[in-house]
Image (tube, rainbow, N blue to C red; front, side, top):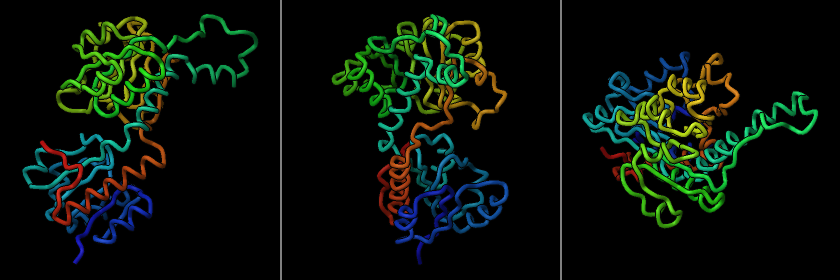
Length: 320
């Protein structure tokens, strides 16, 4: 008898076909208030879960006595209560690596768009305001040959450093839990303390995972350490930043601008103060959102799922 699994996110037919060779699959394109009771009913006999974002905690796991593995189709796994999963002997996996270049493209595009005020000037032209050569009040700032500080030099951070060093001749500073020899040797990155990075960087790019140690790691004190000409880019998670402190820093000129792909609350509310600021560029958490990359992530998640249910060690088992 095949193990039963639930796929709670829309995935390509190729991914479903792969899982169905060894598992019985119940699939939901997405979970909402209408189908969540059915999801909980199916969860009672499920041995595996595949998707992302869903909070997998004690409350949910109490509905899943047969669960053996939960698989995220994302790098982050802050939606998992890892202590509870470990206590119940349930495996957890994620999908690192396959999205590094795609996310790095997005983050560097966000950095460029913020520095050169591209969204603002796009609307300037489309609104019919371009009547003569623009004045200094609409000038952006250079990216090339500037100092980029990367907080969190993992796979994505390294890919960002590569683009910055080889494409834009930027000096790279980084702060990480451990030294990254690849970034140092290939891209001239210099390891430093967080305070040194904040004080010296023209661009501060936050790429850390969300953990208890990184929640609100960038707040009032950190923004005050930055240059008044600094641009802050967040491609990690919204909760790694004190959002109120960011708003104050932008309003008071403590920093020049910000580019954000993530927010504390997602989707962000239409009346959020950050959305009315011209010196803020916003994206709807689309770091890995290309068809090719999402397909790779889903297939890697499925590979983890099938491996775990066949008694093998999943390629991306999360260890705590």
